[in-house]
Every structure is written in C-alpha cells, then in structure tokens.
Amino acid sequence: MTGPKELEKEVLIKGLCTGCGACIEFCPYIDIVNDHAVIIEYCGLSEGKCYDLCPMTYDIPYERISALRPDIALGPKISIFAARARNLEIRSTAQYGGVVSTLVAYAIDSGKIDKAVLTKYSYNLVPTPIIAKDKEEVFMCAGSKYTPCPVLSGVNRLLTERGGEICIVGTPCQVIAARKMQRYTERIKLIIGLFCTWILSYDGFYEYLNERMDVESIIKFEIPPPPENVFIIHTKKGEIHFPLDDIRRFIPPACNICTDMTSEFSDISVGMVEGMKDWNTVITRTHLGDELVQNAEDDGMIEIRSLEEERIEGLREASMKKKRGAHVKRGDGFW
Ligand SMILES: Cc1cc2nc3c(=O)[nH]c(=O)nc-3n(C[C@H](O)[C@H](O)[C@H](O)COP(=O)(O)OP(=O)(O)OC[C@H]3O[C@@H](n4cnc5c(N)ncnc54)[C@H](O)[C@@H]3O)c2cc1C
Ligand code: SF4
Ligand code: SF4
Image (cartoon, rainbow, N blue to C red; front, side, top):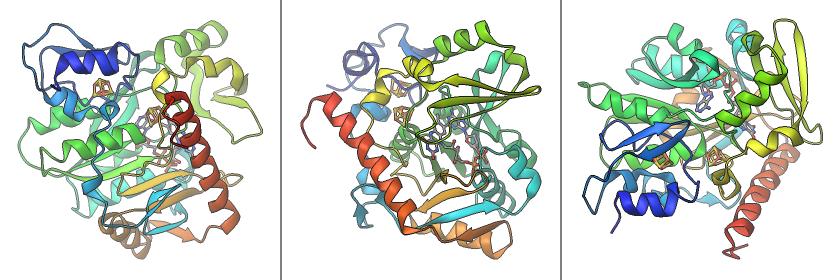
C-alpha cells in the first residue's frame, strides 16, 4: 500500500518532507503550509501519485540515467569542468558564474524548451515557483534562496495547461522528484540540478533574520566553503556576517539523511568552485545535458575551462562526507 496514509507515516510525521511540491496541485487533499506538505483530509485511496512522486519514499528512478557508468561519489557523469556566463550583467546578479540562468535562457531562446520552472522571492523572502517564458524572466530568478521552494507544484500547474516542453531547476531532492514525474509525462525535458548540502526551514530562519536586521535590504546570501563557518548576507549597505553554527539549527531533518550533494539524477549539475566566486563547477550527466552545454559554449554563451584534479577530489570528498553522515544518521550502517 503506497498512498497518502503511508506518505503521512513515512515522510510527514517524521518531519522528512523537503517541501519540493511534487505532491501539490494535482490533488485537492494535500497542500503546502510553511514549506511542508500537509494532508488536509484523507482521499480514501490506498495508492496515490503523492507517495509515488515523493523524493523521500526512496523509489529512486535509476532507469532514467543508469546507462552511464556512475562515479560512486559524484554519480553518473559525462564530463566535469568549470564554466561561467560570458555576459557580465548575468554574472553580477547570479549566485556564482551564472551558468544556470544562462543555460536556461539559452535553452528557451534556441527552442529546446518552451518554459522553465524557477524560483523567485515573493513577499517576506518566501521562495515561490515562477514559470519563465523568456530570458528576462529567467534572469529575474537568478541567485540562491536558502529556504525551500515548492518548485514542482509549479510544474504540476504547468502540466494542466496545453503543450510545451519544460525545464526544471532544483535541489537534488527536487531533481529526484522531477525524474519520478517523468514516468507520468513526456513534457519534462531538461532537469538542471543544483549542488546542495542543506537548506534552512523558512519560519525559524526568517524570524532569526527579522529580529536582527532589515530583511528588506537583503540583496544576496552567500555561504563560503569551510573553514570559514560564516553565513554572509549582502545588503544595500554592505555585508552582514552571522555565525554558521547559529544558522545550522534551522536545517530540517530531511537534509541530515539526504545522500545526494551534487544532484546525481539531473541532466546537468551546477555548483560553486571553491575560491573562484564567479565560476561554477558543472557536471554533465546525460547526452541531452552535455549537448546543451557544448552548444551554449559554441554559441558564445558560456566559457569553459578544465577543473584541477585537486578540486574534483575535494568535491568527491565533500560528497562522500554527506553520504556517510546521512547513512550514519539513518542508522543503516551502509558505509
Ligand atoms: C538550498 C541551496 C543549497 C546549495 N548548496 C550548495 C552547496 O553546498 N555547494 C555548492 O557548490 N552549491 C550549492 N548550491 C548551489 C549554488 O548556490 C548555485 O545555485 C549554483 O552554483 C548555480 O550558480 P549560478 O550562478 O549558475 O546560479 P544562477 O544563475 O544565479 O541561478 C540560480 C538558480 O537557482 C534556482 N534556485 C534558487 N534558489 C532555489 C531553491 N531554494 N530551490 C530551487 N531552485 C532554486 C533559481 O531558480 C535559479 O534559476 C546551493 C543552492 C541552493 C538553492
Ligand atoms: S512530495 Fe515533496 S512536498 Fe510532498 S511530501 Fe514528499 S517531499 Fe514533501
Ligand atoms: S540537503 Fe537534500 S533534502 Fe535537503 S534540500 Fe538539499 S537535496 Fe533536499
């Protein structure tokens, strides 16, 4: 039996909902409240898409990319390198090198996809799914929001409308849910995954910030790599630093048992490059993703350079650290 009651028992009651939004919109009995799914009423069915799509029910969709030989730390990959947007304006608003925004805009402009489901702040720094149809709308969503966005509820909404191929940008848990959604629809064409070590629960984090600063002045968040141990907030008046140890208490339980740091099920994964703020680490994982990146480079949208072996090894170590920590917390003794 794999329906809403099991979803409630295995995911919701244990506090393991990541707020990805995959179970939202197609069912009137489930809604999202404060970045968590809530069953408003039982629908009476013993099997449901809500359970099936949830990334925390661990029916991982290996079949989508299993043809490639996996790297145990970094997942399936064709190529790994550093890249950045050639457009300086994009780089100035993007989180790091602007590769994600550039690739999404390029995929729309070149007709490879019709629309993208991205994340933008609405009032009070609430991350909200946005359906972007052109590059201006894509660039408005640049920058990392470190609280959950129900991105896949935006995809479910889009799927109720007619036609068009869709791109999704999301964290690794959202990427897993998006792959599961591909079992039900052909319209999800491109999945761009972000690296992710953890996210912060909205309520606690917003309250923490609101008590200490003018949240209206926030331009961008930044988490430098260890050993810095600081959470930086860029504001109109300069930088504000908070101790990372203060912020960690807002990490939700799901992140502690999450084994995927580099969005292993995406077509293209993108993260930072330590010590090179306006560059991204990029991993292409499927032929679709690899071709898009190559075309974007050939057409002058992004520039690419090789990544030093020490950096790749550092990324492998960070990824394995997350996997080991998660398995220890799950208590499954796998590692
Ligand atoms: C919660 C979170 C944790 C992260 N942790 C790490 C990490 O540990 N190590 C690392 O190397 N990189 C991490 N990243 C990725 C990194 O911050 C950048 O997003 C990535 O390097 C792409 O940079 P860019 O300049 O190409 O992005 P941009 O061009 O600025 O595009 C960013 C894209 O991210 C999407 N986005 C923003 N916030 C969210 C969100 N909450 N949920 C879903 N999509 C979102 C936007 O729609 C936008 O399209 C994290 C990102 C997030 C959101
Ligand atoms: S599908 Fe996503 S939003 Fe729904 S319960 Fe699972 S993690 Fe939460
Ligand atoms: S750490 Fe894992 S569960 Fe938490 S937001 Fe990132 S991908 Fe999702």
